Amino acid sequence: MAGVAAGDVRDDAAGSDEAAVLVVVVATVGRLSAVETLGSTTVICTDKTGTLTENRMRVTQLWLPGAGYDTTTTTTVDDTRAKALAATAAACTTAQPPTEAQTAGSGDPTELALLRLAEELHVAVTPAGRDAARRAVLHFDAHLKRMSTVNKDAGTLVIRTKGALETVLPCCDQVLDPQGRLQPLDDGIRLDLQHTLDRYAARGLRVLAVAARTLDHGQHVPTDRQQAESGLTLLGLVAMVDPPRAGVAAAHRAGIRIHVITGDYGPTAAEIARQVGLGHEGRRIVAGDELDRLTDSELDTILVGGDEIVFARVSPEAKLRICEALRAQGETVAMTGDGPQHPYAAEPGRPAPGSRCRRSCRFRPCRTTGLPRCPPTSAARSAGRQRPRRSATYRRPGHPPR
Image 1 (spheres, rainbow, N blue to C red):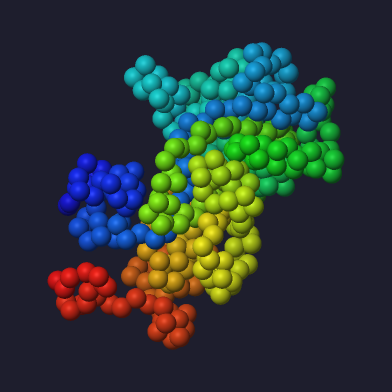
Image 2 (spheres, one colour; image 1 turned 30 degrees about the horizontal axis):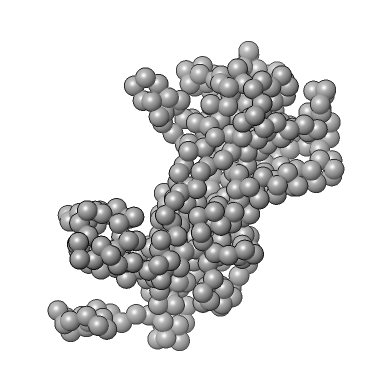
């Protein structure tokens, strides 16, 4: 196996724009031909968290019905609802907080930030106590965009859920008012939630909704996810900041376009993209449900221009569909990211609804359709868009014969 790192770039190329981009990327490749592909990249499809940002989460805002707190300026929070929000969010985690042996902790940085918040509000959740009380875990799902746990607290089973507001909110039917009493989740509260979400997103904050439900005495641990994640009480919103990463826009000097493809909320991703120098004001945001409704030709029309687009709330299959569409247009595409929305997180044989292969692909089975073999969608597409097969005599324009 051949390894290529930043230090392997030749000195005589150090002044070029292409080299400036390669210095940012540290790659380990199995074939030297991959180095040539890296150098000829024309489009980068990147996720947001940990790529455009530093992946160092910190909770800065709390929203509660009728109240809000800035945790960066408020030294003490006496609201019992805020403490319940922090404790619930921390209990619905699997991360391990920092220790003397592992000072950075381990697990999802988002969950580490939630554990830190609970500690700051003096309702710390210890991993040992959390895991001992746990009876079931409904792991995060890239399509549902939420996670739930079932814990036994003081002899009572409690379901705790956290995730994207648009997926958690339909599971809730009540909230806690400022006096701590249950009240129906009416249209006024829903409108306030949407305004709050948009306000946080305009600042580039990542937002999670947190909800819970206490099961009646004698009820067993739910085995059905839909049954478990229903009739919840919305406790509030948690907004966290993730510092943008410097140097991302250097790829523009090499003529590379960058599309942001993320599972996060669209306006949040767009603001982070603006902060790192991608796109422009009023850039187009394509949500996952809109993307699923687009035909192949409509998607081609969006991608063929020179704009940099933010694709938000996408699934792994949708991200792969975008990359295949770009490849079909003759682009050399690089993908970055290792989150649950990354295309290689897609389960083989589990196609997205209505998905179909953009071209004869080399994957067996195809990662787009799940079929053992994927023919082109049409003979015209195959003839007009597939790149020529390499042979002993084939060479790329401008390259010497092999």
